[in-house]
Length: 526
Picture 1 (cartoon, one colour):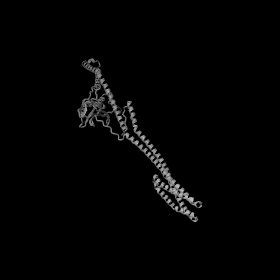
Picture 2 (spheres, helix red, strand yellow):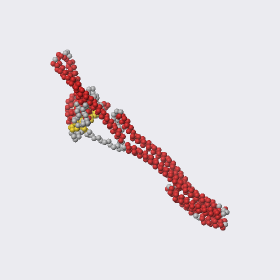
Picture 3 (cartoon, one colour):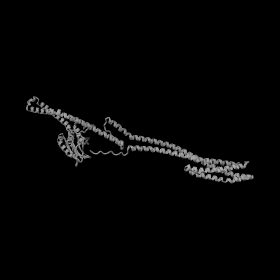
Picture 4 (cartoon, one colour):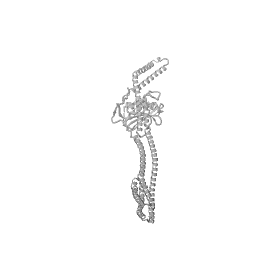
């Protein structure tokens, strides 16, 4: 027997495929989640930039503009003031507060805004700082003008007062204009950042929706893929239930390289083995029944048949000595005696065939030359074959390895196959016997050119009592299979190319030991 070859490992296991499918789903979900987190982070950064960066700057500039507007208004109303001293105090107070506001606005622009702003904001900060510094530098020139103004007021020089107020008004209004423009630029930056944040948020919402839909689609595709991968399990389960109900018909298996495909193939192989074992068990049961019946035939039928045959012979001899005893129709009497003798002989042959089943001993196999035994059997059967109008040819491969077999039982099996081939060609024809080595077996092919065996009954030709001929017991091929399988070999019935049938016997090549008796095979029904 050839050693069992382990099944190859699947190239792509179900676990790996499911893991990859799950990984794809996780990656899609992670991409969606990552995009959502990024969008939320960008939105949070925009909010921080607005709340902690631009809004404080806008507030400081608004306060600065309010102080500057107030100063401008006070300067324009100085000529109408009745108490210039109080106005001077107010102007000096507002001027000091304005300087403090410039410091706070510069701190908000140059320190806070770059810390929370993006690259675009950090590039915008130097422009704001430069403009603020220029405005503050412009206002540094109003201090001596204020001193000169209040000196002119003290002296009562109206022309000098008006000239100084005009100069101060120009400076204050120019500063107010600069601050207004600076506040407008900050306000524009706020509006632009807010608009960009809104657009980015809308794009993020749409992107999240698209990614969520894609993730859902990936999840559905992966679910269907995993379901398709695991679908064969349902077939295997249904098949197992059918086998449990007794359906041992072997079904074709779809090719595949994963574990489920291998499981399905192994399951069908197991079903095939169970079917063969069931058929073999049924055949052995039938052969055992035949053996019991043969023993009964031995005691109850064969002895009376022998006595009947002997009496017929004695009666023929008696009638031959006294022809007058046959009366007026001697030919009819001889015909009846001949018919009785033929039937007795046929029954004796039938009982002998049943007895051969009962007499099959456990094979004692020895390593020997198969070709020699096959040649002897062919020569022994040649005269009988040629008498039926057939011819037999033997083809033997050179240097055949020895095989394990019981010579007596192998002869009986080969004679059954040659007789079957002869009976398959009632009008005569060639019988081709070939012996060759194939793999770990020595193969014997017996080919005939008869009408062939239909496919629907080919599997039943080795069943006991099954016969396609009108005569015979249907035990010849059953005995042949029993002998070959007891030898650890196989026998098959196959269609021959060009018409006819090929019966193929495969016997195992002999191991190193020359004698092997299988203890597990009981070849004799009891």
